[in-house]
Image (cartoon, rainbow, N blue to C red; front, side):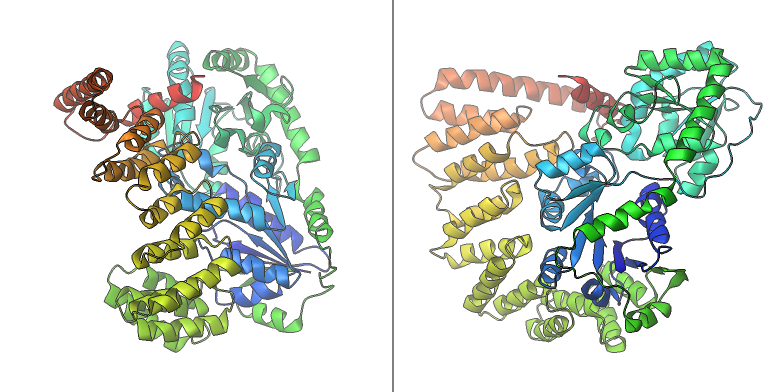
Length: 635
């Protein structure tokens, strides 16, 4: 049985618990070979075709969709690893900007729906993925490997600590004032924090009492846990946090740290309150529980011992890894899983990466690094030279040819691009990215009919490949095609939440039809924006609204209806309300316009005063955290 996991080689907890540690243990099982492979590795196309089970981490490449289709035709099993609710990140998370884009979200949703199975880390996430259309969802909790003996008690000042990524700043900041007051009242105690340097502003302690460590690898984090006695786990009640795993409990327990946990989904059915940890539901309760552990050393040590005893008996990887392999086998309805692994595959693996028993790591090597360096170049000519050199040296490297074709189209050399893209399809025939790029070449060669035909073919054969729909809707609008609106409606039906695709299609409508079409988009998606994506959606959709307001339309009633809906969805927008007032005023509804003008004036005065008092455009982080906390906690 050949299991191939595709992704990057991170050093964080997710990479360890969800990908590499399970792979190593599966590779120890009889009859199983497990491979972790970089998503641009030169052996990936071969492994993706031959693997009995292909496990996909998320990365933004729409060619994953036709890859899934190809494997379904071969009767092969493809699994999507979905272990975080990225649709509801804290806005300052390093990855929040990309996840504001509904096209990124749409790819994640399609992978959830089209994969043969989805593996996840919590019951809460399993419920969310099922609601989004996943058919076979299985929960594999994070497990511990190489458990060390319970650490000895270290005599030191009572030290409370927390570690987390910048994406959890608001969780920590929510309890920070309460924790600061408690620390002030107990001058013999210390605080240890491991995260981004910005969090140092949350606390005001003597340097001797405040131990700060920058955010780092999981090894660095586990070393940090050796410096604290009590660990806290505050979480605001967001969807993202509710979907988090119980790994902090595992880490605290295995490292001899007594934990105080938010009474939320990740810990609620795992931690036994008063025995393996303590719960809190508010910052005040956190301080009360912290006081208990500070005053009652025996209780702290008892919880410490019982938590360690629980994880060593219940949460070791070797005791659970077989469940994962058995689930993969249960999805094999066509009995396509092979008993062994082809010798030619093993030979290729032996020379390509690190090996440990039946486990292989195929990291980015010389070829892949050349490709990544070429892709990162900002100069088109430099990128072109690097890609040409790469494809000459590595003529079987499909990713190089695809990128070369895209680059050549970008600098308007479509004839040469076609040659590179045809070579791509020789190597990976399923690549819809190559097929739509060929359509782009036809367009640049001024054969628009051929480009349209190519794009329609991709849309019909690979229905959920969104980039083809983007290209097609743009081209149909340029062509002023009679069937443009029909294709727009098909796109809306297939990607109902992806408003950016719908906006591309607007140019297929006449000026008189556009207000109604955009109103339909707002009605469909207006109530679906998370706190994270609301500002981005407002910027994108309001631009579309203002473009329609500027049209010289005789009948203003559809424009008024559009502006009223836009004001409902984005009530904070001064310009939307001002435009609404203006249209009402010039259509004889002056009395109604007054309330909107008044609101716009109040907004503008407040904005001008803020600009006068705070000339910088940047909003202080502490303001942002406080605003976010209020939004989350306000019913």
